[in-house]
Structure formats: C-alpha cells, structure tokens
Image (cartoon, rainbow, N blue to C red; front, side, top):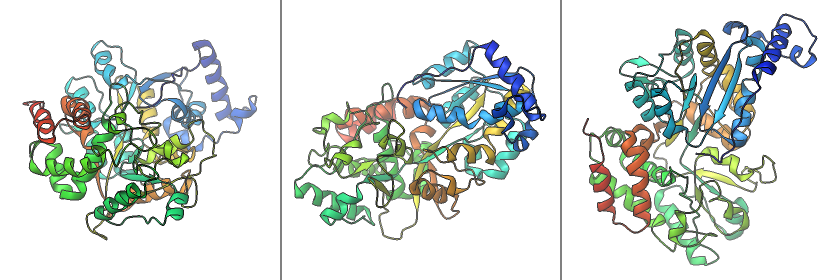
Length: 452
C-alpha cells in the first residue's frame, strides 16, 4: 500500500563482479576502498557464499524501498549474497498465484498474517530455520512469533512494525486556537465539535483510496475503537469470529467512528465532502494540515514518511514542529495504553542456505538497528535502540512497543481471512461511507466469513 516505483538490482555479470569485491573486502584485501570500510564482524555468523543470489518481493515501494535495500547492503558485501528486491502494489493479490505456478520469489515480505496462513495452507512455504527461530525467541515477544506461525509450524519472523492509532495535528494550529490534546474519547469528540464550530475548516481530513485495497484506512478506525471500547478479549473474539461481525459490540464501534467519517461537518477538511474520502489517496490525505485546511488526521506511525514525500526535511515531526501526533485516547483518562498496529513477515518459498542466512539477518537486532536508523519506520525487535529512530515520535513508538505494560493487538483485518479482511471489510467501509446503513454493512461482511 505505497506509491509505485519498481526497483531492480544489477545484471548478473555486474552482480558477480560486485560479489568478488565484497569477498576480498571481508578478507582484508582493500583493492576496493569502499568495501574495505565495511565492518564485517556483525555478519560473520551468516557465512560466505560464492555467487549466491536471493530474490525478494513485497509491497514496499519508493523511498521506503530504497531504504530497505540499503539496510542489507553491508550484509551483501560481507556474505557475497546478492539480494534482488522487486516491489509491487499488486504483490498481495499475485503472490499466491505466483507460488502455485512455481514462480514466487525466494522471499516474500507478507504484510498480513492472514495471507501468511493462506500461503501455509497452500503448502508453498518453507519453515523457518533454527537460526531464525532462535532470533525470534531472543528478540521478539511470543505474540509476534505466533503471527508467523501456522498449525504449530513457525514460518516467518517479524520484520518492521507500525502503531496504527495516531492522530496527527499541527502544534502551531493547536497553540493558536487554544486546542488541547484530548485525554479521552469524549474529549476528542468535544475537540472535533469545537473545531467544526470555529468554522475555519472541517476538523478531520481522511483518505480511503488505495487502489484495490481502497477502504483499509477506515478499518483501522474501527479496529482502534473496538479495542478501546470493548477491550482486548472482545477484540480477539471479533478477529477470530468467536463473535459474529454483526455483533452489537461491533455495531457500537462502527457507530462511534461514523460520528466522524459519515458526518459532513467533520470531514473532509481541505478536500471536500464526505464522498471525497473514497477518492482521496491515503498517502496525501493528511497534507491539508500543513496548509491550515484541516486539524486532525488518523493514520499510523509510518505516515511520518508522507509529510516529506520527496525525502526532504522541510516539514518536521516534533512537538514544536510542523506536525506531531497523539495516540487515539482511551475511554477513561489513565485507562491504560491500548494500541493496534501492523507489521511484515519475510516468508520463504525456496529451501536454500543463502535464503535462510538472509532471513536470519532480517530477524536480528543488527538488521533492526540498521533499518530504523535510515529513517521512517520502527520495529518491535527488543534489541532495537529507540534512540536510532528518525524522529521523537518514532522513538516514542518503539518505546510503546517495548513496554511490557502496553496492550498491543495486531491490525484486525490483517488477521481475518482474506475474504473478509482484504475484501468484504474494505468494501464494506466504502459502502458505509457512501451511505449504506451500519447494520446492513455488518450483515454483508458477516455473510462473507468463510464457513471453515
């Protein structure tokens, strides 16, 4: 779910030459000055390979893809493994077809545990090696390990992470108008009504458009409200279908979100009326805040990247910067920290030592610190130093994920069967925002839940 720009690495002849230079660098030959500067100590445990290549696919695109590729450049130099990454916005839709046809990449970065389950059921996945599992047992919580497990078999370690419940705002706008960060959901509603009554602009700016995945930002709203209104146990029952999708508690969460997304007085600041949520890309939906045309935008921690889409730093993310964010508050002040979030899982489709060496690196604290230090993302890896993050908000996000007192729940739609979480739930949000009644939408989604 990113803007599209594909990236391919070097042609085979160039790659082979690069591998040769990399190996000499690690043995002390400084013919290539740049390679000689790499400290290969942290990579010795992965071994060295002569001419090996690992192909990898995923949904990560644009600046994030560039940073991802950079995060394993030293690993390539020191191990001799050439890593060829291709990103595609259609990865989620195509990967099962590619796997069935024997054309999947060696590694696929899967952003949904539900999709991982589907691939495991298809018999296409290679179980994770002992090295990968040992890293996960050391650096990740048991909950995160379970997201990469199916039917008792461990298939993939977590990679990056995000916290989904942030509300972005302009500190200057709040100071100028005397607005205060709300401590409860009722205070958030009162703040929204105050901004609407002031009349300068509608309080919220929202974008639900994301190609074939249009609607998913709306599911994040519902998931946040399910966790806050009804707690972790009910949330778990909902995503596992122990309670039906049209349960009254789910209805309550939709209605609470509808106070904003279905209310023309609340949305869509700087963009248009309620209907424009469906056509406004999620990547650009928060930007009216920078122009003073909107005050509030609900989106995950990864949205930090989109305040500076070209990779510059003109819009700072800080308490006194261009933008900052607070977590969607609880029902009662001091009611505990409940957050939803997401992440990715590098699954393997080819059984090879170089593939597992690469996956072991991705599951390590070394990779987590390398990637997060490049900016824009976080990880729930317990070996990650929060201070290497690219902003105060991302440092805060890492500390939230590492805090044992935090109640964390994975994105609900990502845990649900694909027919629901990546289809009827997304489509239901679109129909609902377009005017369809809450009960009818919930009934339709419930009827789409697979019988087994």
